[in-house]
Length: 499
Image (cartoon, rainbow, N blue to C red; front, side, top):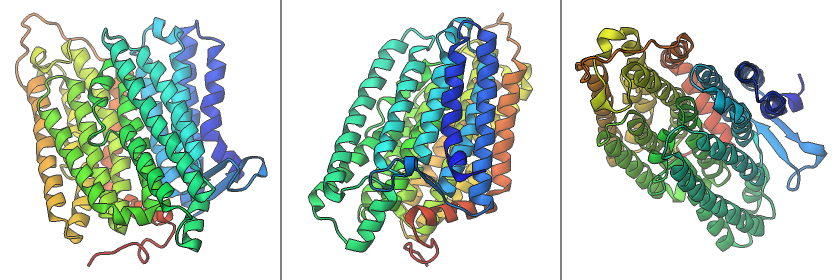
C-alpha cells in the first residue's frame, strides 16, 4: 500500500462514511450499524499505518498535488502520529459500540453519526498534518463537530454550557490564527519540518519579536484546548452535559490533541523555546495537576469528578515537556497513550454506574458491589490505573515521569506529582465507597440490567489498560523513539540528558 493511501485513509474514511450515513439519517438501525462499521474500518486503516511506520521503521510524508513546502498541504506520519491515530481509533470504535445501546432514535436522526465521524476525521487530520495552518483547519473541523455533538446532549443545561464551550474555543482559535500570521511573517513558512530546518540553518529568524509573539499566542491556543491552568475553566462543566459516549470520546481525545500540539510545536519545531521556557511549563503543569485534583476531590457527581481529573492529568503531560529531557518527553508520550484509554474507559464505566444506580450523584447511589460485582471489578481497573497502582499502565506512566523529574533534580515538581497521585487515589476511593460499598440510600430502588455491548466495551478497554502495563517496557521504548523523531534528532544524544 502506498504512503499516500496510508496517510489519507484515516481522514478520508470517516469523512466519506459520514457522507454516506447522511443518506439514511432517518433509519437509526442504519446509523448504528454504519457508525460501528466506519469506526472499525478507521481502526484497520490506523493499524496498517502503524505497522508501516513502526514495523517497517518509515516516516511517511505526502504533499498534496506535488506542492512542496512551504506552500503545499503536507501530511506526515512518524511514530508519535501513528501511535496517536491508533489509540484514537480504538477509543472511537469503543464509543461507537457503546453508543448503540445509549443513543436514542431522535438523536440518531439528528445526524449524530455524521458529526461523530467528522470529529474523528478532525482528530486524525490534526495528528497527521505537517504544517501549522492545516493543524488549524483540522482543529476547527474537530471543534465544529464537537459543538454539534454537545448540542445533541440530553441535559437541560447543555445549551448554556455549549455556548460557553463555543465562546472559549472560538477565542483560542483567534489566538491560533493570529499566531500563525506572526509565524509566517517571521519565517515565511508554516510547514513544521521546513521551519525546523530553517531555524537550524540560519540560527535565528529575521524578526525575533514576531516569532516570540506567535509562540505566545500558540501557547495560549494549545493551552486552552488542552485544558491547562489557568485556561481550563470551560472544561469541567461542559463534558458532563453530553451523552456518556460523547463525553468519553471528548474526555479521552480532545484535550490530548492540544497536548499533542504542544509536544509537536514546542518540543520539536521550537524546541529551543522549551529549553528556555522550562520553568513556565513546569509551573503550569504543577498548577494544573493541583487545581484539577482539588476540584475533583470537592465534587460529588461522577462525571464532574472525572472531568476535573482530566485537568489534573494534563498537568502531568505538561510537566514532561517542562523537564525537557529525552526520558521526560518519552514518558509524556507514554502517559498520553495510557491516559486516553483510561479516561475514556472511566467515562464509559460511569455511564454503567449511573444506569445501575439510577443517578450520577454519589449521594443517591450505593450497594452496587452486591448487585453488580462485575461492574465493581471493571470500574476498579481504570480507577486504580488513573491513581497509579501497579501493575497497571498508570503506575508505569507516573513512575517514568517522576523518575525523570528526580533525575533532573526537579524535586518540587516530582513531589507535586506524587502528592497529586495520592489525592487521585482518594477521589477514586470516594467513588468506590459511595457507589459500591455503602448501602443504597433508596430502599425500594430496583437496579437496572446493564447492556452487554456496554459491559464488553468497558471490559475491552480495561484489558487494554492491563496490556499497556504489561508491555510498558516496549511501549516506553517506542515513546522514546517517538520523542527523538519529534525533536528531529537522536533522543539519546542530542536532547538534554541527566545523570
